[in-house]
Image 1 (cartoon, rainbow, N blue to C red):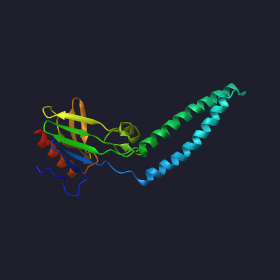
Image 2: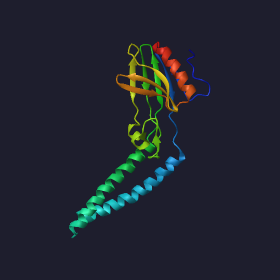
Image 3: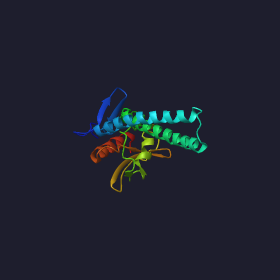
Length: 199
């Protein structure tokens, strides 16, 4: 098996005395994302000022009807939720994207999932995962899986609907590799990993 990535691929290779690591980016941030983030920063400033003004009215001790005070407290609760949501989106927009990494060593292999650019399209249905992208964003974390070669991994390259998936099992969890890669890249990676684990 040729251990060099295919020509023109997104996969990079690094070697040392003990292992070989393949890495690839999971997309790039777009100019549109930064434009949306700039608008949200502007909106956040105005929203924060409005929240402080409302809080001062509620807690200043001035005469205010009970209904008005309860309404303002309810509004402040919604204000806090909106503020937290925008801060969360801004954090995900500006945090660095981590590449995926597959490390092959003599007694184990290790897979680091990396992270992807934040997707502003909350309501686009992700058929591969069965959930809206907004909920998927909460799971956009860099996870690390180390598997000893003596462990059964159930390596699979299969097509589910329109998608080709490369997966392996870690206990009861099924882990997908290279969902942002092209099909030829996944097929090549499957052969490399299968040769390494002796499958």
